[in-house]
Structure formats: C-alpha cells, structure tokens
Length: 522
Image (tube, rainbow, N blue to C red; front, side):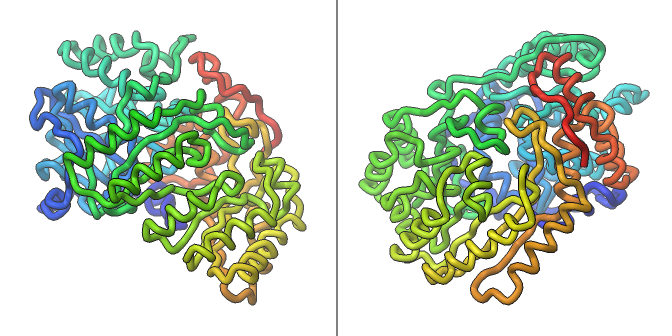
C-alpha cells in the first residue's frame, strides 16, 4: 500500500468527480466464471470493494457475497475504487442508479476510502445526514467483511447496517427482509432483529446482544467465481482450505476474532477443483488459508493438483511449518520469490509474538528456496512491539544480511509498526505513537545503510496511527471518518479521539466481547 494512501483518501478534501464515459469492456472479456450464475434479478444492488480491481478480484469474500446475492435473485453489480470508480463492471452502470449499496471491507484503511468513494459518487457518506435528508431517496448503505469481526462500530458513521462475521447465510436473511418492501424505518427495525446485523441508528440507543456469525465452511462455498489474468494472482483459481487459526500469535486477529479454526475436507476441495476445471481454464490454484502447513491433507492436495496439470501457490509461508514439498510447489509454480514473516530479528522477542523458531531456521528455509531455484525473498518484520529495545531493532538488519550472505538471495525487508487490535491477545498493549515510531524507524533505516543485496521497505507511520485510530473507533470517531470524506480533517484529530476504554464499553453494550481495558497511551 502506498505511503500516502490515507493522505490522499482521508485527509484531503473531496476532489473526486463522477466518472465520465469509460468502459470495463476489456476487463469483462478476460473474466471466466467457474460457476454459472443467474444474470438478472429484481433488486438493483451495487457491491463495492475499496481497492483497485486487481486487488478486489483476489478477495474470496467478495466472490462469496456476489454469488450469494446472484443466487438469491439480486441484480448485483461490482464496483471498485480504480480504474473506473463509479461505473459497474457488469454493465458500466453509473452508481447513481442503485438504491442499495453494499461494501466488502477487509482492512481499517478501507473505511475512510469507502467514505470518500461514496462522497465522490454523489452519495452522502455520513449516515446521520442521510437519515435527516429531506429528499427521502438516499440509497441504503450496508457493509460486511473482515473488519466486522474486529470492530464493526468503526463503520457505524457511514453504514445504515453492518453484517457481522461470516456473511453468506446472513446475506440470505438480509435479502428476505429487503424484499418485503417495507418503509425505511420499518425495514431497519426488521434488520435490527437479526442477531448478526448491526443497525447503528437502533442499536446505539441501548443494550443489545449481537453475535458475529461463524458458519460451517464445509457447507459454504469454497472457490472463487471468476478467473482473470488482471488480478494480482493472475490466472489463478482461488480455493479456500481453512478459516480461523490454531496458532496463538499475540498481535494477530485470526486466533480470536476469526475463531474457531475450521477446515474443508480434501474430497470437498478436490470436488471444487474438478468443477471449476470443467467450467473454466486456469493454470494455478491459489490456496486461501491462514497457514497452508496446518492443512493436514496438503501433500495429497499438491499431488492431486499436479496430477491434473495445475500449479499450486500460497499467499505466504510460515517458517516453522514449511516443507521442501511446499517450497518446491511454489518454485515449480513459476514464482522466483518467496515470502516469510519472521516478525522480529531477535529470537526471544519473536518467541513472545507467538512465532517460536530460530534465526537458523529462517536461514535454512531460505537456503532451501535458493537451492530449488528462488532468486529473492521478502521478509516481514514489525517494530514497536511490546518489550522491544533499540538493540532488538538492530537485529532486523543483521538477520537480513546473514540471510543474504548464506543464501545468495536478494532480500527485501518490509518493516511495519505494531498496531494493537481489538480481540487480540495484545489488545491492551501500548501503541507507540508517531514520535517514538519515527525514532525507531530511523534506527532501523540507519542499520540498513551500506548493505548490498538487501533493501528496506517501511510502512508509513501516519498510516499506522490512522490504522490504530480506526481499529478502535467508537461511534463518534466513525462519524468523524465519514465527515472527513467531504470536509477533510487532520488525522491527528482522529488519533486524539481514540479511547479504548470507551470503545470497549460500546462493544460490551452490543454483546461484542473485545475483552480489553485501556492500558497506556500513545
């Protein structure tokens, strides 16, 4: 993600304009469906993914919700932030034609972008302003996605309703309610009766018990709807293996927010591959899973894919779980770069994060990759971790230099600030804040000076501050995010509003257990 994404999408004023004539024709021509879906429908609906088409089309959640809406008879059409933001992929239809707008929101950074996209498309992004509008014809705005497992309140300033957690089954119930043709207030009241639909205008008035939906993924969909060369993964079938995670990394939302850990059986996965192969051509299978090495039938799956002439790819590889067979599958699949996440250069600090493997193991895995034909490696690290010292920061460059010297690979180190999130084991830990993060960033940068064959990439400090603030946004902060889409605002105002204790009280009132009290301050 570019360093200045938030500056462009959140801090500045609204410079977006309705798209002049442009067409998604060339994109449509390259799309191949793995399952035949109904083409029409009786309810016009826009579904927006707040990213470029290439990124959004690589999101399996978007595929699932689109499929659900189509199969329930909804005339849904896709929208993306770029390259043509206000016309649909399906028919080049303008956003203004849709009375229902849904968004699939994966990351905290997507929320201000969503608000700006609405404002640029002529839609009032502030929920309360739409509610008091005299026109009475404002579209209904809803959202779902990964953010709702962590902090759905962060969307409350924008959305009329928010689907909590695994969205497929809840979306079917949502459609049944919308089809009743009720007046807006009665319709929102009906939505609020659903245990996994959060309606801010109703639920913020008192104590309500909501639940984040968790489904049996053996009964849900398991593969992507489309295959197209224009995604970040290219000619790849997206295939889900697992949801949730059995690991206990303190910084990660997966073990708690997305629990319980669930797997799809090998026969079910093979059936998805065979059905997709019969419907569309593709060369690669992209395994969607928190950690591929935890899938018990992985070797059999790789062997099956190879037997039908398909390559296999993984989003990333966990150092302590990777095998030579997995690495060979990656290299044979045409990738000459591998991605791992040591998180820290110091072994003791790394162990505290939940990743209990040595620096020797890191180097051995990269040697394996080099021996099999890899040319480069990307290594993810965090700084601002609990218990971190300046000496720990220097260990990052030392590990990268050792990896380069002993493997011959070109090394890229990607360092990003640690952000404590609701629901994680480290939810109560201190967020370092802008001043200290800048100081630590400078230490890391200096330590990489003069290293040959090693490159450092760092995420923006201000971006991390906004991520922290949005992660813990209560109702008032969410309203500010929506208002800033049109008026512009200093990101520091949003950060200064962050009060974890107050937000946790809001969680508790909704029956959503963030399980935290504020500890320390940035």
